Image (cartoon, rainbow, N blue to C red; front, side):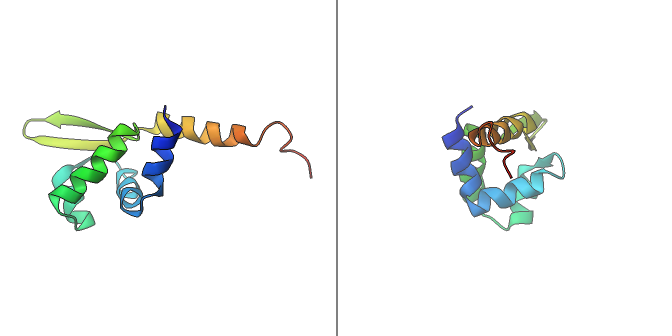
Length: 92
C-alpha cells in the first residue's frame, strides 16, 4: 500500500466524487461517465489514478468493464492514519 498514492487520489475532487458513486456498488465505465458528466478521457485519467492507488479494481464481462471499491485498501489507509495518533490518544 502506497499511502502517498492513496492520499493523492483521495485529495482530488473528481476522484472523490467517483468513489462516492462506487460505494453504492459495481458500475460500468459508461454509467460512471454519464453520472459524473465526464469525457471518457477525463474518466480514464481518474480511474487510472484510483487503480494505481489500489482504491478500486476492475472486472471485465463481455464488452463491458465494471469498477468497484477496494475496501481492504481503504481499511489499511484508515489504520495507518489512526496509528499516527500513537498510543497516547486516550488522554483527556
